[in-house]
Image (cartoon, rainbow, N blue to C red; front, side, top):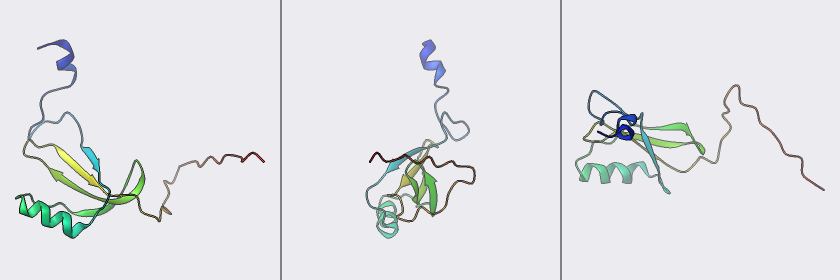
Length: 97
C-alpha cells in the first residue's frame, strides 16, 4: 500500500471510522417527503432535529450507510438564528459613508 493511502486510515466499517460524518445540504427539507422516499428505498429514516452547522441552525437528519458511514441530510438554515454560541464574538464592520 502506498504511503499516501495509509494516511487516510483504514476503510470504514461497523467498528472503525476514518471520518465522523459527511453532510449533504439539500435545498428543501420536507420531513414527510424525505421519510417517504427513504422508506420506499428500504432505508430507515433518522430522527429530525434542529442542529447547528456551517450555515447556522436548521433541520437535519442522520443516516448510516451499509458500510457504517454516517451521513447528515441538512436543510436550509432557519430564518430564526437567535440562538448564539455562548462564547462567540460578533465582529461588526463599520460602513463607509
